Image (cartoon, rainbow, N blue to C red):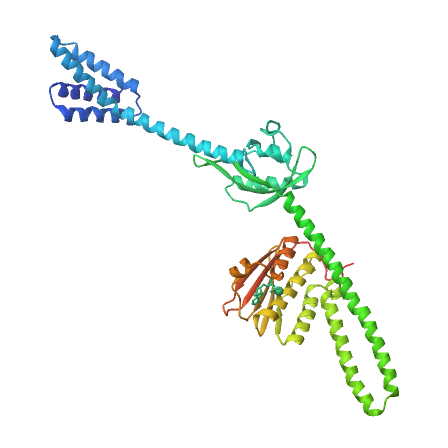
Length: 444
Ligand SMILES: Nc1ncnc2c1ncn2[C@@H]1O[C@H](COP(=O)(O)OP(=O)(O)O)[C@@H](O)[C@H]1O
Ligand SMILES: [Mg+2]
């Protein structure tokens, strides 16, 4: 018998003797403490039973009992034994409760995972698929059994594999990679665009794998694509109108000029003088028409890029409205055509809003590059507006909505913030590729 058991046995012997000698509660308390100690030492009910057996045999067999003594002693021994087993009973109950709670929480987790609309799956440290929820089958057409245990990377579109491996690695290192997109090969052969979130799977304070949630973003991609087409169609239409204004209206006005010159020849001097005033007005109209048509679709945007086009726009708005407009910084290299057009249209709408609503005197348009993002801020010193109220207003203007939609199409974002002086600031962020158009040359 080891030392611990021997000590316990001795204590048990003494306590039982005390109890039988009539020490009552104090001895029962000792029995309870003995039970607790046995439990704390990692002994089981079986060990305690063995101790009891040994003690009982030793201490009770030495004597002969009369009937009454025997029955009283047995009852007392029974109570004593029960008391010493109480800690085991309590611990057993508690563990049952904990188990039940655990089971319940597991069931809840299961049902969340099973009914989720996103694919939830876990990967081993070597990127094998360990578990995957049922929606995986609906989205990809694969059956779960076809993929459990297999390399996750094989499910990823070949071009995306190096990046997927990198993200898996960084999640394993406990870093939380930002939301990322990967193409997933469906059973039908189609590539499904997926948006992923990954995080380390932790067990007993150790990273044992990666937990991923993936969402099928086919619909969103389609909507973005449709929006892009719509915007392109809109630009084409605007181009047509701009040409009509510039060329057709311009030609008509030129004919009016010729007509007026002919009339002037037949008029006396003072009549010709008044006609000159009309001509001067006509020239102004022509100029405005030309400017408007350029603003509508500035060929400058295609030929020279965003900055010159915005300078031209700002100049026109300034002259028409008296607003002071400053452009700070530069968008840098040429951006993709859809991004340049979107930014031009957005600044155009922002300036229109300033002249329509802000009662401002000054506008600053600032460009900043931040990593792979270009930030364009349009800030005025006007009256500002209550944005949440405006966003909640029904039948509200199309300007801000249009800005949002143009940004969706180029994966950009819009933040509207009140400026310290009460005016409005629009912060537009668009992704720009590191290797986007290398030069500032005209676009073909
Ligand atoms: N720079 C600004 N200063 C003050 N109010 C603004 C500004 N920009 C937008 N707003 C407010 O937001 C509203 C919505 O703008 P918008 O969507 O462009 O619609 P619209 O210009 O057709 O009214 C405007 O009616 C105006 O109340
Ligand atoms: Mg507007």
